Length: 144
Image (cartoon, rainbow, N blue to C red):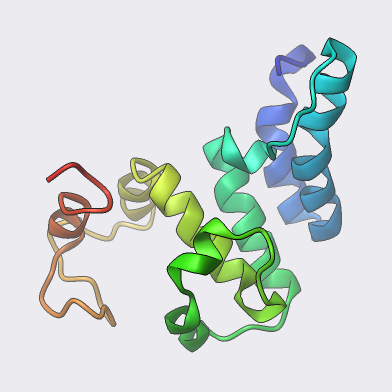
């Protein structure tokens, strides 16, 4: 997983910027499989399972590619999060929720990048009055 010039670390960003969403998903699904085949393994993982940038980028790419609504996030169930077969209109939300659950430490960085204070309440949240900081100090994001 160490290509020359660390191109893999920038590939997801470049794919998003150029709106090559299908290519982004194909790379995420196929890269580890190709590396594993060379090493004699199976490679059943996606890059989104091991690289936070790909986890968030594939979710964002799916959101930009497929017509979906923000309200449909409430339709995502635990079964969707653990199952590989997800309805197309829920795939973006499912991928982003998986990214948040797998790599919760990225969210404060994203909030900082958009100048959203972690001590502010989460707007539109099902948990009224809960701040980002409180939310990420609670299960399933921590062992609290």
